[in-house]
Image 1 (cartoon, helix red, strand yellow):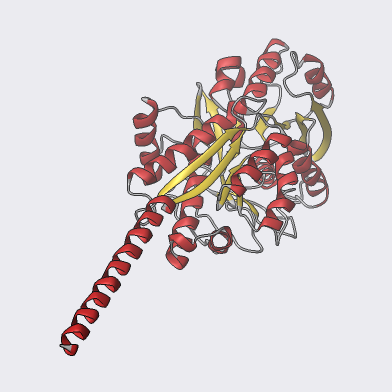
Image 2 (spheres, one colour; image 1 turned 135 degrees about the horizontal axis):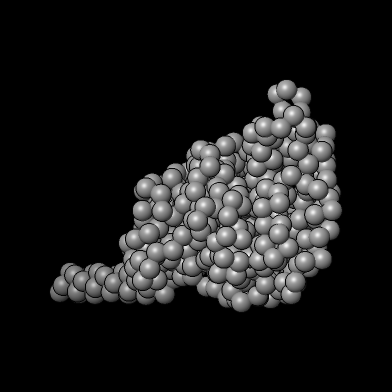
Length: 415
């Protein structure tokens, strides 16, 4: 009898243990159902002064994350993409970053120099990685947590300047000028280019540039004629133009009216400054022959990544268009998702935190982007992902490749 009671007691104990295990499994499952998303955030200018270029970058990043989620996410976990329009205003960027951080974002995306400078020390304290799509070098301070998915504008322009000098046919040295916005995104790279051109850049036969000067202009000026006449007085042969697609179109329109459309070789500081809005505002003839460097392949190329971009554009937008900003957003997605995948593999989705993502982000080496760009590499001593460009020329309203990949000259000692 006593033994029977012991058996019954043991049985009840086993049942209780089984029930507790089942309950714990149910609770874990419920927790997984609630927590099984990887939160990332993005604050970009979608309606402000540089939205003409940035909105295409944002579309590509959004499309890439949607594509990854439709493929099952990362190890079965979907990416939750939190975003807002920051209107190119630093306070809005800061406010959204703080909100996203507090809501559990493990990776933040953005674009902008001024906001990058404001966010970099804060993100460093938070140990939260940020991928900034801007190409200025000033926010890329080693030992912080902000990197760029781009190639620095100063390096893109330096490659253009070297290429132009190497292909200059006249016996006299070419004259070089800078024409661009009066803001840190342009003046920062320009401040590096001027001394480098004056002191360092030399062709194999000893020829160097003559420095013509620089003209800084207002953002969204109603008319650029006065600025263009000042530029004409400098008598340049080649001009690096630093402004976005919208203002580039306005400058080209006014230059054509003044007879300056082809008075010198216009070369964008970065190819991302050209866009579909340039042609809409200026027309094909006004920008015929303009050139620009770009770390990105044309959407219309036959590389695997470019083919995929066209498929995704057709699927989500119902059309394919060749804006040069779209590949930048795409490559940003490739880099960000690669870091998320690697971090998840290392620590698991429930232990995923910003520090794990940062470690993997700074260990990316030779990442294949499907031919949308040269392979991407980041490290604790290299905070920009790309270091090769192609030169492009506008011909009949289309971008035509002028060179194969060119390695950019690197003259910033800290990078």
